[in-house]
Image (cartoon, rainbow, N blue to C red; front, side):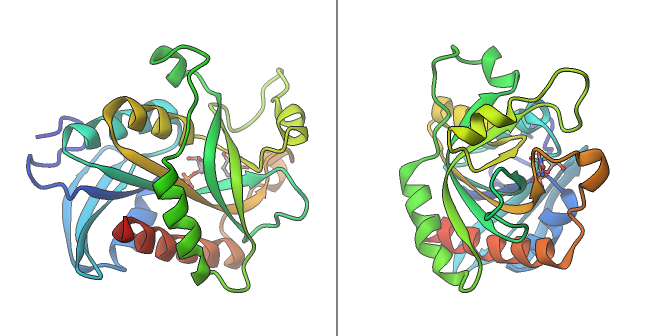
Length: 238
Ligand SMILES: O=P(O)(O)O[C@H]1O[C@H](CO)[C@@H](O)[C@H]1O
Ligand SMILES: O=c1cc[nH]c(=O)[nH]1
């Protein structure tokens, strides 16, 4: 049995959708056929089911790279070969409005976890086949803005007294910020898995999140439903 996920050996489909929120893993699992609970332990709520004839798992990883890394490592131990993260993110660009989708090609490693795994120069890259599959499946998103490019992974969500590096990365063309992609891409590279991520924009990363953060809007709910459908189409097309 996987010690933190508590999934029994041999029970994990090779294709896995991951997301931060256990409520979202239940929601996505509800889109599958033949859905069953694999396990629920800590923030890790895991389901299996079938999408268009292909077995898929949906697993929540919680907030932040360290806890998510435990999940990604144990998915590798359990035999996962492909992982797509279905997340939310804050946009860096006015025109990438809340409700838009971002497909991540790579993650800037502005977190601590991956620095304890690989040297600073090691890139955190999404798998090109996964990116291509997500871009193809994003044809489902008629009428919704879908951008493809680099995202940034941070540890902190709310600011302290040290400024976040948002401005530099924004000027360098990074699209959006979130908290787990770098861990996913590095661990996938180390463990021979293919990984990618699609993110629903829920606001602006460089705003004062204490004042304005609200992911509970219709625009975000619709974008999350859409990105889940895109991720399921992409992971079963690989
Ligand atoms: O919506 P999820 O997948 O949790 O992603 C984003 O939302 C959380 C912060 O609210 C962080 O986990 C961040 O990466
Ligand atoms: O990390 C995150 C996730 C969602 N929105 C943000 O602004 N930041």
